[in-house]
Amino acid sequence: MALELVKKQIGLNEMTRKEAVQVVKERDIIVPDGKPDMQRVLYLDGEINIDQIDVQEDRVVYKGQLDTTILYVPENNSKEIYTMKGSIPLEDFVILEGVSNNQRVAFNYNIEHMHWNILNERKLNVKSIIGVCVEATKPKEMELVTEVRGDVAVQTNTGTLSVIKPSQSGTEKLVVKDELTIPQGKCSIGEVLKMNTCIKEEQTKRTDSEILYNGIVEVSTMYKTQEPDMPVEIVKHRIPFAGSTDLPKPSEEAYWNCDLSVKPIYMQVCPDFDGEDRVIEVECIVEAKYNTFDEDTETIIDDVYCPGKKVKMTNTSEDYMTLASKGVAKASKKDVITLENGAPMIDQIFSVNLKPVIDEKKVEGDKLTINGMLEAKVVYIDPESVNMIQTAMEMIPFSQDLTLEGLNEDSYVEVKVQPKDVEAGVYNKNDIMLEYGLDYMANVYNKGNIQTINQVDVADMDKEELNSYPSITVYIVKKGDTLWNLAKRFNTTVQDIVEINDLDENAPINIGQKLIILKKTKF
Image (cartoon, rainbow, N blue to C red; front, side, top):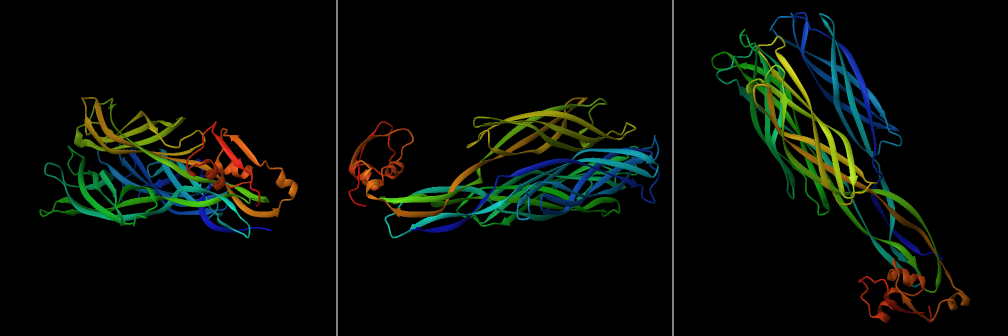
């Protein structure tokens, strides 16, 4: 006779798999008609834009382009700067065995290195090394027993399955636009060479119905003037923004996070009231990428027996992934970059970019140590130099300890380091002082295992089997014993042991404790 098992479908996730690769892309970029011949490159920059990500069997295919900005001079001693743009198509794939189109995929990328080579006065070869990282998490459905029915007395042991897993995710876009006026004391605009945007003073907040976010978009503009004494100028503007995402907060939500980024999508130079080109119409997109994690708790039956009956149970072992904990740490930092040709004035610094590279994640007990390097890149103008646009590079080490609940050597740890509110100032005649914050974020994922009951068959015991159980036993509790295990072992019930020994059913039993266990005279 088989007992009836009432089951419930529960969604879980398999352990995340990860693959990181480097790809090399290059292309020849032609000087546009109407611009002079190129003799010397002053500056090269790039930005990756991914248009499509397609998850296929055992691979992730992506398409997009690498947009480049090149600043050059037509003659070796010229201070006349020109800009041109180009793009390198990106169409490639990453092999990830076992991935399929029903999996959650995180696709990350960054430009690790860019290099140029002048082929002739009208052609430039640009080569880029791009790092691509793909992480895949596969959902799985499991049937777990929540109730057992039958015509015989059934003893069931219940357990709690608690899993924290990704829930909602999305991107909210906010348009930020303004008319930026060149301040008095700076030259009017001849041509915009390069625009850089970043977010400062960002704040995010979770309410019962939405995610709120606000901050400042800092716009740095490098432009060409028509003044021979100051051929290039830099001006900075700050645009406040505030937005929200409608996202009701369920009671089971355990964690949430929201990352902000910004990029310009439109720029136009306009005349002011005096007819001079001193106004920049700019439009940016602030993206708020959010995701939430919910805790799913289910009461399930993980063991069954019937006193006085022979029980044969078949089950299956299933592995799953759960988010064990999240950790956050913030650090304020100061570092100095030394320049061989002397430090520029503050208003000549165009941009400061800090790119973190994590070299090591070391686990000792519940402590995670993150070690890495910040690639600091400072772009500024030097009107006295032949190379008016200068780039200073420095590698800055960083290290941070986080104490994380549930961390162990077998944990899968996802770490992200984000520089915040980067400011540059002149420290002395040769040094630039960088002041910034580093946000460290770590997710700890652990593998769990659960036994799922597939079938329970019940048969009668014969007289000899029943007589093999002692009528009365004085049992001394050993390590690992539970009331459930003892009741099942001696073919009685937890309730009988509790009543005879005057115990609290929910209280633990102690090693060395004596228990009286009676055999049931009739089952």
